[in-house]
Image 1 (tube, rainbow, N blue to C red):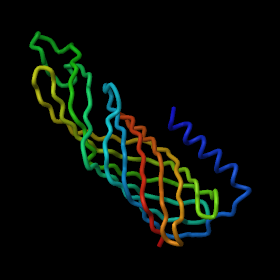
Image 2 (image 1 turned 180 degrees about the vertical axis):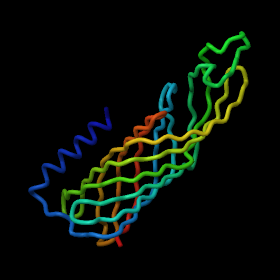
Image 3 (image 1 turned 45 degrees about the vertical axis):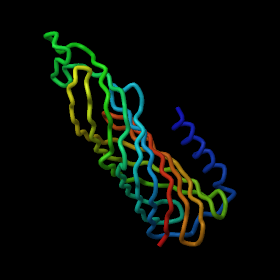
Length: 205
């Protein structure tokens, strides 16, 4: 629900300021980078897993409104989780009862190998220095996890997924070239729902 409220609020703010503010006249290449927080929720997990990483966004602003930007993020630590899975998902008889039909309460950790995406972005100004923006695109994520079962089995998993992504954020100009950036993105992957927040510093070439 939080992601929809944030996106709706951003869209409302963009609409409210469209007639009152002039567009940012900057065009050309820009680069943003900084801290990336991801909440990754695999299918079957009780809750999302908090992971930390670094991210970079390289983009090109074609006109006063539209930009195209690419995204690359990598994890710097792993997050711990509790994971309820069917034994037959791993072809594992963890409690040696002769079948693969039990649900086992495993635990482990998950880490982000990398996340890449491509987005279209639309900007509108709030003040002379601050802009709101919305973006939408498609992303791909690759993660690895280690799972420990109650029976003492250790399982290592690497998985990847892709799907649409949508988000919103703001930038604040520190100078003609330097800016602060913060944004939220929801990634709708097949095997995970992922929420991301990025806080960073950008440079407009």
